[in-house]
Amino acid sequence: MKKLLPIIFLFVFSFVAFGQTDLPILGKVSDLEGFKKVYITTESSQDRKFILMALKKKKSDLEIVNDPKDAQFFLEAV
Image 1 (cartoon, one colour):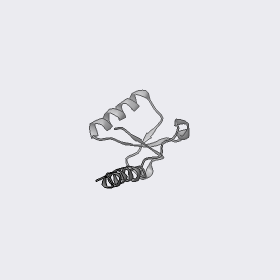
Image 2 (tube, rainbow, N blue to C red):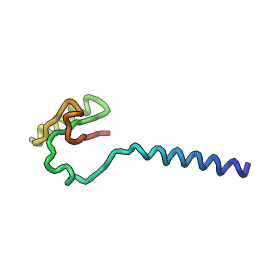
Image 3 (cartoon, one colour):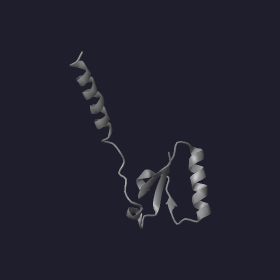
Image 4 (cartoon, rainbow, N blue to C red):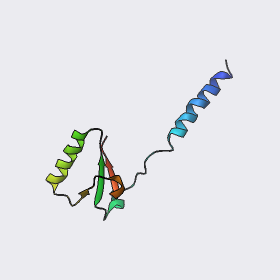
């Protein structure tokens, strides 16, 4: 039993470490300077509409694209 417990902990922590490999690249807001084409990804279409309305109200110069291939950066609302 004493040998089994460290092996279990080793497996648990190794899965946590491998789960960290697909994290998104996060940067500073200044890295987006000059980018205008944005793709918005949300959990629901209503959330997407809410964000679009907020951007229109703000009169942003961002161009919302419908295809991720056309985007210069992504805005993910979770």
